Structures are given as C-alpha cells and as structure tokens.
Length: 118
Image (cartoon, rainbow, N blue to C red; front, side, top):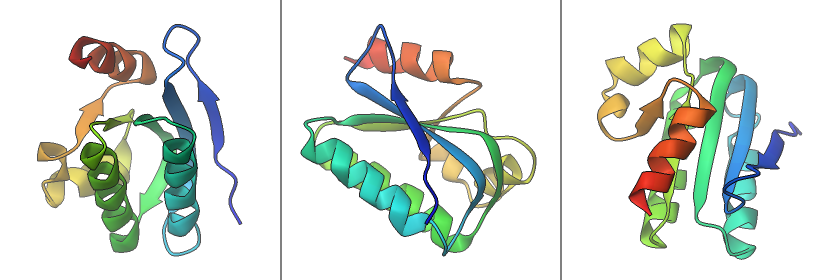
C-alpha cells in the first residue's frame, strides 16, 4: 500500500495537504479515498492534493479525484490540486478536468484560494 505524506498547514490547520508521488492508479486510488474519508471523519472538509511529484494518473485515478471532490463538496468542503505538471497536467486539460477542479501552481496558492472562499 502506498502511504501518501500528509500534513496540516500551520496557519490553516483545517486544511489537510496530501503529497501524491509517482502514480495515481489502481494500486493506490482506494488509499487516496481512505485518506479523504479519514479526514472527513476527523471533522475536516478541505484538502489540497500536492501533485508536484505525481508522474502518472490513470482513468481510475481521474475518477478518484472526482469522487473525492464530490464527497467533500457534499459536506460544504473543497478540494484543490497544487502543482500538476507534465503528463498529469496534460491529461487534466485533455479530459477538461481543469474546468471542474480547482488547480493552482503550488500549495501556498491553493491554500490562499481556500482561505478566500471561507
């Protein structure tokens, strides 16, 4: 099982940051959903997925992003992606998920956008 590195921001502790590395595919998509669910059960509703070190995303990974976003939105929360690049950014644009997901250059910009929304 993949263990995503996670941390809370010092100035906004209600935001969970998950650092995704390598691939988001069949091997670890369910783990991502488990991380999201745990954050929700702990009372959280805002997540930033740091994609700077994400090299690949499968169709299942794309679906997982949508499931996570939908689950958080139903609770009045939000999800943002930070730093997708290369093939991952290309895929997000190709399937027009850049229109549905909140995508930012880095974690700091994503956090600032979430702060403005609250």
